[in-house]
Image 1 (cartoon, rainbow, N blue to C red):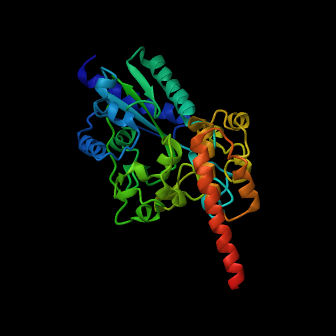
Image 2 (cartoon, helix red, strand yellow; image 1 turned 90 degrees about the vertical axis):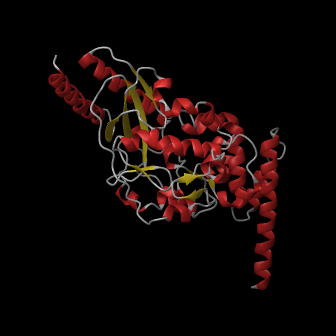
Image 3 (cartoon, rainbow, N blue to C red; image 1 turned 60 degrees about the vertical axis):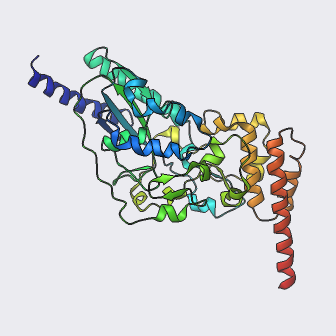
Length: 367
């Protein structure tokens, strides 16, 4: 096969891969090379400043993140894929956030664990490629290894990295998952897109804890998603009130992004909201025992934080809710729980409830 025919063959294969990807439920497929020089400096500086917090795995495997060939030898291209996840028939985010007796769960976690869904689809895509060309070198990733997935998504033309650090695409906003396939095939690469955030700083302004310290720079140590999902220990006092009723993750920067007026609702049943977690009562969730927690979060990404951190997060949300004897009773019932971590946050929440009760009483008297 001469070079010209080979070039045409690879271009045709790339086109087929994109078609197969859409047939498997992905909304967009892009292909790029593995040159991350434009992202390497930013990533290294981000680590040096400690913005990754306790996520030691970010620095431990840094060299493999910025050099894909070290992670999977022989890799010369990356197939980047995106899949919409915004669930239909779920309560509107602001509707939940404005009702402090409800718990807010990040919209990505309302359905089945995306790691499983995307990984299986990406594996199916590799099988189709194998059926067409034979065995080739590849490895599938879905937020499961040291991969700079946003960098590859940007390079492959899927979208641009917004000021909140999420990938945005003009025709679908940012409510989508990303997945990658490292391959050893010299496929033609797609052209990256241009950024379209302009002068907008809505995401910086809305962030409850000011974690977006500058355009494109997020200090995870201030981020609510980091504290409610990644952090294993005690949530610092300075962030507890700002957390509000967010018990798993935070979507504020996406909710406010103007480009998300173009976001599409997912048609993937696995991502539909399950178990009434789109607008749950905090006291109901707090009364779950561990068995019920495991049952109600089966197959969900929420399970990864475990029962104690689940209670920790809800205790903070209850502390931030309006004073209620029912809330106080639910918190007091957890004072005997064996976890010191849970105990500390429950005590804080009870003190917050006391403050709210006193304010409410004072207000009634003044009126």
